[in-house]
Length: 149
Image (cartoon, one colour):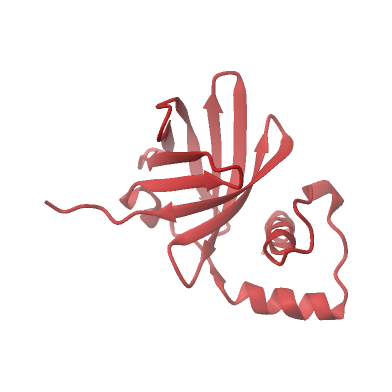
């Protein structure tokens, strides 16, 4: 596992275990033995993404402030984001690296980057988002079931 992925996992673990609200990747604390055991258990609930599963269906993205968008991933590595209630749009790119879904979106003058960690127990996944390279928000992303008519 890469050092980058280890840091991303620690960052998300700290948020989901409610130890800290959000911690920047550059300021992650060391874990004591008890916390390391808790994180090891938390890691058993995570899995790696496969590249094939990403563009197979639309996704919903929501942040802790309640902003909800739809993401449509294309096999060519592009992604389109549409806000559900304001219909604002953004575009960007995606890729799977070391089992993590890496997304870069542009909306207006803003750039949003986040790395999604897959949940083994459901299709609801998690990420920490950066806006213009600054720590911004905790996200939940849900893979939606495609409709076969």
